[in-house]
Structures are given as structure tokens and as C-alpha cells.
Length: 346
Image 1 (tube, rainbow, N blue to C red):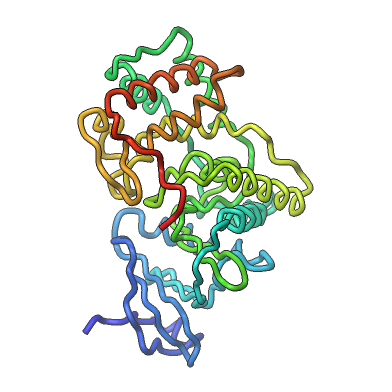
Image 2: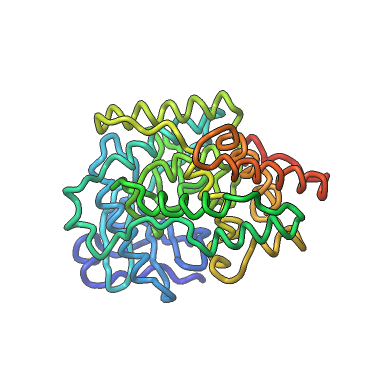
């Protein structure tokens, strides 16, 4: 029989003993159960011992406490927490099937999540939530090597464009509460709206970097999809309206920089456990691999198309836009069986 969660004295005193525990599927970094405490249905999550486990726990607990201020709710209620054992006890939600136009509900909830923090939260997040970090010089080098290996050398000036891009993204202003992995599956579609879960990678930054998920194909997600253009436009409009209503400020229209940043990151082609281990763009030249709903080359071809359309006509990334278009055309010629990303989430 699978062992259920064990509460320490603090949680037992506040909630009681967990009963009727049943293990749920989760990543190797955590153990998750459905259970009851004092007759109340709950979800119990425990971060297992491992690299950065305490940091991931601190991120998740802090993000849940900050997001719990939003009404209507965008996260499950946090009923109890024990940092010593890295245990979180959460409201159990009845999850439904996402609607066909789910991206609109998703984007609306994401904007409300992002808007829940301000400069006034600096003391709360100090030492618990890091600032978001974008691509670096090594990502620029890896992408240009990838293009050259495919026989598409970068035009003069592209490296300078990308170095400037890295600088702009590192200086991107904002104190939004970023989920860190706002993927299909981490959004629960309930009868009372969307609730986000799994905040182990939460950070503070500019909401544009996660609004871009819709357009660039959910770059950190197993479930990489490309919503039809009318739904994409409606979802982005819903995000912008919700953000404006919540903050009184406008979301910048241009997503070109953040989409280009996601294209540069080879680590956004693999699941989290494999990130930081090798140059995944270089791997994609020699072999393709499937992660979730798409292969690495499918993901790359989609991102290249998005960036070339957004940056190729004018602006600070015009040369990079032309390079992205040339690389994509090369990939489609070299690997003619590449298919577009799925339109619909599984």
C-alpha cells in the first residue's frame, strides 16, 4: 500500500490528521495526494529532497500567499503549510473540461495573477521570489551556431541585434507575479474560473514574458499548441483589458522582443529535468525528439515563423527576423515531414 502524507505537529494541530490519502501523478520533484482533513477534501503536496528543494518550496508558498489576495480566486486556497517538511495543503478543486475557447479564460486569469503584486510587496518576496531571467550571451552563441550548421549564416549586424535584445530583456521593467510554467495542465478549469497550480518556478518580472506563451507555442510546456488566430487575438485582447482594469495601466503592444527571447532558449525544447545539461539546439540538428504534443523541430519551426513575422519588416530585430525566416525555410526543406503545432490541447 502506498504510504500517505505524514503531517508534523504544526499541521496536525491546525488541520488534523490526513485521511483517505490517494497518490496522484506528479513530477519526480514532488509527491501529491488527494486526502481529507477533518472531513474536508484537500490536496497535499510535498516537495521531495533534492537540488533547490527548499527554494522551490519557498517560491510556491510565497506565490500562493500573494495570489490568494485575488478575488475571484486564481489559485486554490492554501489551507496549511509546513516549511520544515516542505508540505502544502491546498483546497481540492473540481476540475472540468476546458472549453473550446479556453485560451480566453486562461489569459484573463493570467492577467489577474500577474496584477496581484506591486512594489509594496518587496519585503514579502525578499529572498523567496527571484527576478525573472531571460536569455544570455550563451543562448545567442548557440542559436547562431545552429543557423550556421544548417548552412544559414547570420547577416552582418544580427549578433549586435541579439546582444542588444539580451540587454533589453534583462532590463525589462515589471513586478508582476509570474507563474514560471503557466502550461496547460497547470491551469485547472473549474466552474468558478481558472485556477493555477504548481508555482515552483514563480518569479517577479514583466507579464509580457508569459503573455507571449500563447503566441510562441507554450515554450516551457509539454503541451505545445498554436491556438487559431481568432482565438489568439481574443485571448491577448482579454489579457490586455483585464490588466488595464486591474492596474490602470496599458500592456505594451509589441511582443516581438519576448518572443525572440523564447526562440533563443534551447532549454525551452526539453522538459525541466534536462535543462542546463547540453546545447539542445545543436542536438536538434542531428536528431528530433518528442516531448508531449510536439517534437523539438516542430517547436522550433513554429517559433521561427512567429519571430520572422513579428520582427522581419522593421524595428530593432529586422535582421534577426530575416535570419529566422531563412532558418525556418531551410528546416522545412531539410525535414519536409515537419507538421505545424496542434491547434487543440489534448
